[in-house]
Length: 115
Image (cartoon, rainbow, N blue to C red; front, side, top):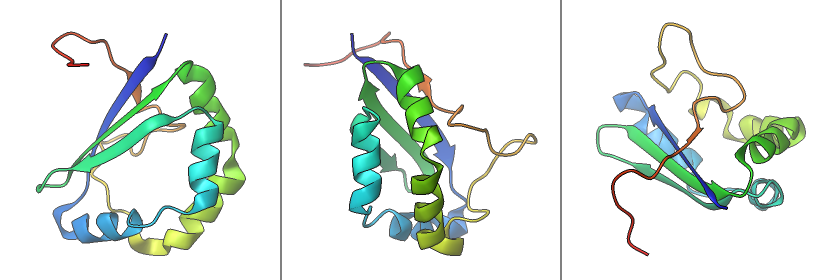
């Protein structure tokens, strides 16, 4: 059964263009790592005020998340390539940024979906 995963973040208003630029071209190695980890139909949307909405589908979210998290080489390489563009760009709570994609959660379909 497909699990639908949704997440939200908020980018600081003055960093919206940086976020957009950092995601304009996703390197093939990062795309491949996401695919290998079973992240399907992965989409990121941004509202004008900096609200980011992410969505993906997978068969086993716990496995998909852990597989991607274990690919430190990929995450670190991508982070190095985007450099300071995203450093301190997000608005986090007092605890700071969550670890291991813990801000991403399976969604329970409660309202409506048109197939």
